Amino acid sequence: MRRLPVVTVADKLENAGWLDPAAGWVAKAVKAVMPWPAVRDVLHGVPLGHPLHPLMIVVPLGAWVSAAVLDVLPGNERAARTLVGVGVAAAGPTALAGAADFSQLDTEQQRTGIVHQGANVLAVGLYSASWLARGRGRTGLGRALAFTGLAVTGAGGFLGGHLSYRQGAGVNRNEDFAEKVPEGWHSLGPVGAFASGVPQPARLGAVRLMVLKRTDGAADGAVSVLADTCSHLGGPLHEGELREVKNELCIVCPWHGSTFSVDSGEPVHGPATAPQPSFSTRIRDGLLEVSVKP
Ligand code: FES
Image (cartoon, rainbow, N blue to C red; front, top):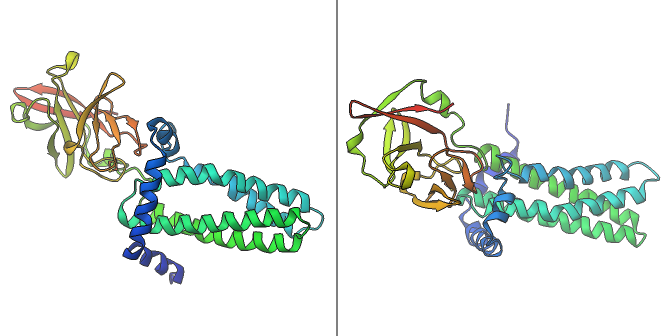
């Protein structure tokens, strides 16, 4: 089947370097106005275990599509205006969650993301104007603005889909981990080969791991092992920094600062929302052995 020309346009956006200054400026501004980790974590969707933004889109989009249906049926002017207003009101928090995710994407993803954002800002402007026009009795103009807004938000939504499903924004980079690591115990080599108190890289076949021989308090002498590929965008965790967060030793990803418990692999801070696969460990005959936790 032939692809629609719009797919080629979206593909080209990924390589449109001229978008970088605008994308970089917006990402920097978003980080500056969201200094609180707890707020950022909620906006990223850390408590949900996946991004919050796609869930929030349902409210403005649902309201605007419903308004469009009412606009083609006679006698629903008041209800249609209410739904247009609900969509505009819900667009703010939805955009905040999207902006938080956008600020932690890679360069190619941000190029698509900045156009996605631009389309949605334009759509909100059109819907706001529609709501005002309807309030002044100019229902015909209000409908025209709303239908234009729906077309623009549809284009923005298409780019949002491209960003997630083609460019992998918001997906768990370790989703297929269980298929890559067979059940049972596997040797990573002599335990003495790993330095203490410093995250170390290791390999189990094609799978990259982060090994940490613990030197902290009660865990002194234990060995923690996590998947090395950050679940957010694939950053190398063994190059990250160890940090104590809420009485728990954590590893901070060097790329965007996702923070994972070295014991459980659970994300303590985003942007990652999925946990790092973690391993049980044991030492047999001087060899460090690992088994992926269920
Ligand atoms: S790759 Fe983004 S936080 Fe790790």
